[in-house]
Image (tube, rainbow, N blue to C red; front, side):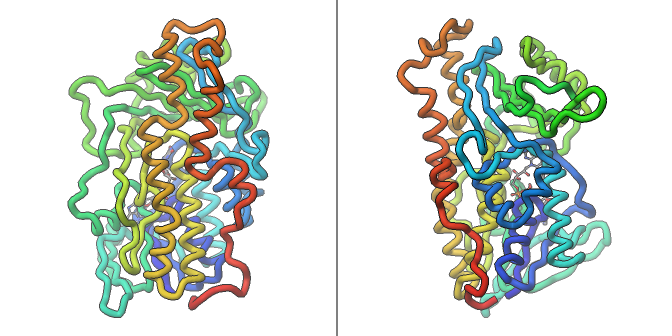
Length: 427
Ligand SMILES: Cc1cc2nc3c(=O)[nH]c(=O)nc-3n(C[C@H](O)[C@H](O)[C@H](O)COP(=O)(O)OP(=O)(O)OC[C@H]3O[C@@H](n4cnc5c(N)ncnc54)[C@H](O)[C@@H]3O)c2cc1C
């Protein structure tokens, strides 16, 4: 069976590795950019996806480029702690939660694809433009090679659109949809080498009803000064009239252009404005997502990751869910009778849960505790239990994990998504 994957991002590369591990022989990744460069800043991978990467035998390599997240803390704009909880192994999972630079994660996945599936499995400068499903059920894919200045066509048994939030495959399936909707918030993201804070493994989310800062280390202390690679993202409502031509992950901006909005988020244990001021890089991005779709799979064509269900970055689900999608689609393709049946089964397993998670992210996911704290105690509090009586805080976080099926009990005990050796239908 031959599979084409549009997009060599986190989901597409994991899908290629998973198909290979499941025994599907002929896999190619068509990636639009001419060269895979370490783009983006930080992201978190939750234990349910780390389990999948471990089952792909990548955990040791990943631990070399990431940091296990130990604690997640929510704070008000005065720096007071609203709620904190252990994460990863400390929370009872058998696998860690990882804080990692997106570019480093993508580099580990791309190197593994080239090593395991062959040097030419990832075809760069190959932008998928469109496709046609043939009467025999196979799919003809049209590809543009902008740098080489030519176009080509190729045919496969199935096409997986893992081409991100601006997915071309999705646009072909849903031509009326238009650009991703914007909620009016602006996010600035960046990295800074800085001294560690708290225990050196904590992710902090702090703010009020208007502004939010997310900060976490992605490495252990290094060098004579003991600096760590710190990821930060700050968000606020756009200025009146402010607009974005498009949502571009790589739009660099000078820190001075937005620093003034966040000057007061300086606590005696974490200085957010200092991180911004001394940033190695800073990017601006409108907070966009995608509306849930009624279907991802249409015959031999499906969507995966952000192409299927891009969501706001609340609760570390973007990369996490794309990895789990990849594992499920590979298992179904390896075990199913026909590609169309396999892709329908993948959708049936994944779409309902992802629709719930997308909706929860629009309600700000577990970060809603920051809004509630601001609403109830804008000037801070002496005792947080007076602001949130009766176990309310515990249930916000636990409910969110259960909703997405990534609570410790489910993740630790669910069957593996790997395909047992010797199992399977036509490959
Ligand atoms: C450059 C970049 C930087 C990012 N930075 C961050 C970040 O800092 N923090 C964060 O949380 N998330 C970031 N993301 C998004 C994050 O990677 C995803 O939310 C998540 O990992 C899900 O991955 P995905 O594979 O679905 O999509 P992505 O990781 O977005 O990968 C999509 C891939 O498809 C390729 N592509 C696009 N169109 C086509 C086409 N027509 N044909 C072939 N290939 C195509 C893209 O070049 C990209 O490599 C970034 C994405 C990109 C592309």
